[in-house]
Image (cartoon, helix red, strand yellow):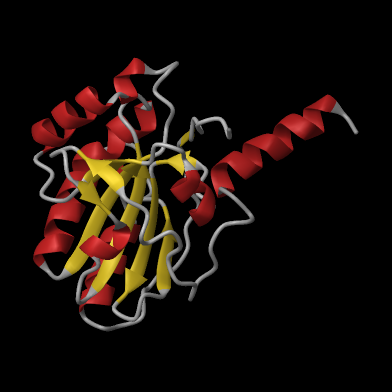
Length: 199
């Protein structure tokens, strides 16, 4: 097997995400795991579950892909929460090698972006592992029955003025309306999650 082929395969998997993650229709895992929110409280996914559904986004601070999309994540998340979708953004990165992903920096980022929803620390990365999440940003949207109806990217371009497909925003609107999500899965790009080492 040539090295070039391996590089191509690795790149393809990086774009497509994990092949071992959740399937459409699955329920969210690890919903009772307590994670420290930027306001100092402990929050679980179950705590934020909304009447219309729940949006879980794996994110961080340092990743250039996150920085490109973070304003849109804030806007979509705040709007979704106002429409009855519970929202939680999870940082599963080990900040040892990336100080910008520290708790203090998370607090600053959430304030600067005007998050009205929790931004929490997955201190062991086990929640990300349970979801099969591999990258930041990576979105999972569940409907009012707790079933996964969308998994993938925020939209189709890092550049806000070049977006043509609003995957997550459209999925949220369909879910709020009780309709089928127009695009249930999309390919996503991002930084690999910097998982905490297993003990």
